[in-house]
Length: 296
Ligand code: PEP
Ligand code: MG
Image 1 (cartoon, rainbow, N blue to C red):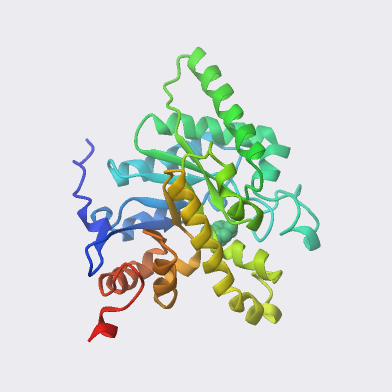
Image 2 (cartoon, rainbow, N blue to C red):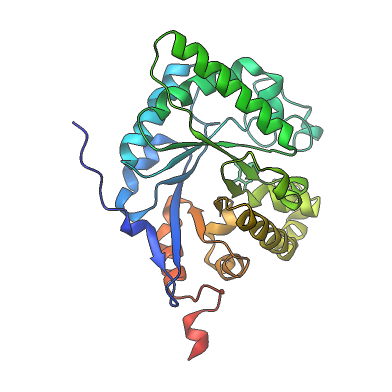
């Protein structure tokens, strides 16, 4: 039997001026779930699926999504569709090495290889019937990519329904990690929610590859630009009344939390071993990013 859902209050931290901040976990592998207390987080804000093994094994993916949903109880589990290409697994069909980050990766590759996208959509549609599942699309640049993936979900849902398979249509949101999308967020009204991928947003804003040590200083120097783009996009999301959060590594670094709070972010998805650190950082701050100690 499934244990009753633990209290979720642990995943919400109040700033010194009483603003609620949500803290979620990032999970790359289901084995990490054992080490996270579900009552300590507001669910999973990013579950990467590039490292879950054979992308053609629908049952394996379904089982892993179910495992995460059972762990989370009624809290949200946001599963990101395969972000292949770039720095991740290639399947032998991705772009040339020199094009990896600027070529076909993420949603571009999913739409170019619809059988993989459809297989994952079926696993997600089935898992969604058993919990609070959301789907995140990687590397969205234009609204048409989101629309094309929605059509895939609709069609697969219809097909599964005809076969009598239990499904539910999950909320579908997008990573905000391509500058052209971040600046034009108001065009993405058909996205149910947004999540900043600052690892990519920084590399694309600075034109400095995230995995190239020789340009690491330029990558780091993009931080103020990243924060300015985030602040503008947060305003657009608020106008659209859509949830927006961050799942890039900046959110796992206490040093960056004040700037991200100043930019208006209220939902942070964090690497499991940084949760305690980030929790105490936020608990010692005002919602405008000032540390409590600064006021004394
Ligand atoms: C990001 O780009 O910030 C992100 C969270 O995704 P990934 O690191 O998997 O590209
Ligand atoms: Mg990314």
